[in-house]
Length: 324
Image (cartoon, rainbow, N blue to C red; front, side, top):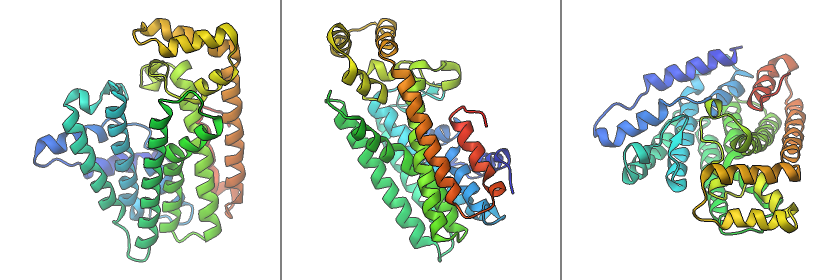
């Protein structure tokens, strides 16, 4: 079996080999830029890992894996535009480096490129692969709409939020694993167990992202700390703070939410202090750990020897900054 690093190298090489250097430059240069910014390449690596559980010729699954990476980066490009974000992975976002219209059009083209790449598999698997990808893409749009709807609400429940991040984040990780397994002719029971594993890891991963947005380090996180606080994003952190805060804490938190001219450092520090007082960090970490344990239980259901599943186990720990 290939190691995680070997699969990552294969993905990066394949992305370089399939770089979109062609005319018109104004359409394709931003796409090449986005795909060159790096990142963990979690989704294509997961696709190849799942394929490699059953087969050795991982290059046979490479183009669908690249399709998922292209699609993921398309969603980030449009998310950054919608959120008016300035930085992604330590670099200027496309709408900042170019302009809004470029971000829209290049993003649209990335979506079509993603589908084109996903469809590069043998005819036997094409219906299942296309059905899985389109279902996933629709669910991600649903999750994005929920996320937008939550912006104008202060009564978002934890259950609503978990469903939103399942749709917006988890289903693509689940799709990556299931797609790789489909291409490798894995049994149906394994397909479902791998999908559920991806969902649970995705939930833990997004909650970790919420946590790092407040308590992370810019140098390693790649995004400006406190961005969610500044735009009053309904994260696990804020939702539970709104639920638990009382009296002066509740008034203070609402005051910062309503303040339109807040100084960034002051607002981030004040809201973080309220989170600390309410015990939000430990609550979030406990939920992350719970989803991680559920994911491990799903991986146990995959009917393969434990040693063949070690890479997925190790990747899950790495994603959540945990030590095995």
